[in-house]
Image (cartoon, rainbow, N blue to C red; front, side, top):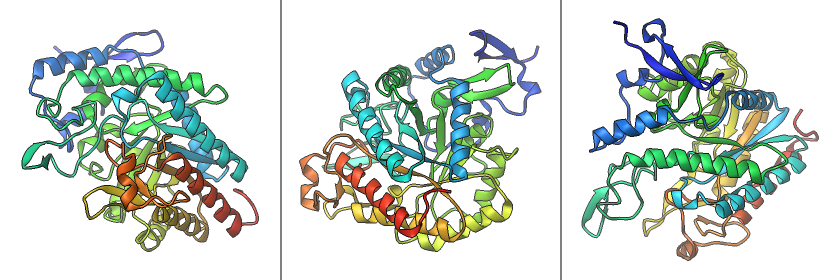
Length: 420
């Protein structure tokens, strides 16, 4: 008897039976590969029930909108438009409310309009929202006042409160994450009436991603229905790893975040695996090296990609390579270093006859005090005033506006023309 699995056919909203033996990839293929940053759940039976429910759930985003975004990414690759990806480092369940989402969308739309006016190009907004509930961690445990507990891995897994019960991994959170994501996505479209808000998150928790993967019989392909755009992070980008295996089979555009620690061969091989047909708009390369290293390493990667003739879109992430801790152990980022890496990326692409197709910022609509510097002159001593992030520090609204404005000015300074 042949082993068979069921996947949702989005054409007719019914199950479609596929014999996995006829496929080189299925949404569960990743289970045969080493998977890093995956939580263990004590209640295995409840986990299986939750995964089954997710497999039967309706899609959050549609294949048609995923394809639409790929076309926009392909446009940014050629410098005809620009990608603006921004939002929370880690979404919280408690913030998935009507009012909170409205504030976020209004803020992101405002920043998009500033970019659009300054660059005189179409700006595609990709929110870090409606699914950014999982976070990779450098350490599996956290110690406070001689008490050691499991690390917080995002609301989709456990809670940020420093108690034993809060830090337990709860399978039911996967269902909550789906419900919250669907709600946030619906709110986002309501508030951004003049244009469409695409969503994105790191494809970290593979149980969640694979159970929300759907099969479209019209085109005989799979897509991740939880988000329009997903990315693989620095900690989970192993060529022989489960994350790359999973991402190799979906239709969605895929971001690859990498630091200077990746080898040229690894990056080129990864692109070949994730985009074997050299499809335009499929791959977004997101260097996150820090302002001191970007000038040394980025040109080499650009030249290698150009030499191979790979179709990729470049996006600058000036946030993650510039995260550091104060003497008191508080994570922060310096405004000037963020701006420096972003501007350096712009110069490097211009000198290499390449296009910088987008920017990636972690932001908050609130007047948080998590990043040091900017017009408000936030200092290390001010961080405690309104430090709200569940993970990494975010730019507040004023800082984000200043970063974007300075980026536009610098672009205009080095070129008599806007994006060609």
